[in-house]
Length: 368
Picture 1: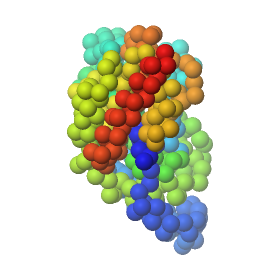
Picture 2: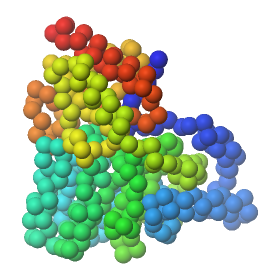
Picture 3: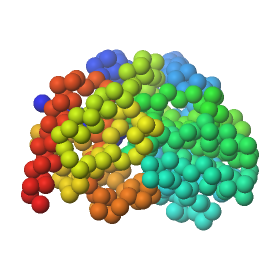
Picture 4: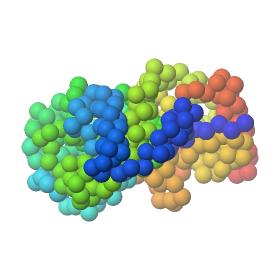
């Protein structure tokens, strides 16, 4: 038995999507070409753009295509900073593409987060009262490592009260939380296609008309902000996937079953991050006295594929930025594994997961 529990890193293609990809493999013409075949591809890209706009309740003119979540983050944050005199107020548990960029600029201030990864409302309010319209707030809708969801609507209202702007990285949340950019009144938002059961190498950036960005790739495509011949295969596939995407099964029932069952099988473990205000498919578990890396490796031998956190930190001995930011004790910081479900797991599979975690944890504890 093999059970994949690393859907936060990337998601598989279902058979319908594979069939669709096969059907468009001959659509190789350049969408910028003037002849009919090129115009046909342009029309298909326009249709995909509309599908994606409908998916997040936006206007299609406000949708840009990039090469992925990191590219969308960079275009949004660096692109805005380069074009505007602003102070970047950023979440310290944001994606590495954002954290690595803000290290290169002087006027960037980390926001406070509590032990569950929730941004401190009063701290943000205090900073907004100082910087007002110069404030550019950068946060993720939900942290893909520990699963904590931010109250984006509440923060957006506060930021706009002080005439600031906000960018929301939705890559970690888009597979489980429907996005309505108009209802939330978000200024800029981005996400990656491969978290939705689509292809890697394709990303989306939404921005309001009044938001000015500097390009990160010069050229004529995508409003001149992300130049280069479009990734036709990735864009069309994402347009297909979002048209058929269903959030109805995104509940926390199976995640809660895992926690309840493990609580009766394994002593001395705890859940990291907010439990109630959490992505429904996310579990980050710390087992006392057990290396997360060793546990991940041993579980893999039994067909249970998990991670020790964000794929961006994979293979690094450096402590996770997220775990450091929430103040996790040093003795626990390398003891965690992350399980991210897809929602279609059976009870038999869930029970198998719990039993293998129990067996592997006990084996490792006995070794030490």
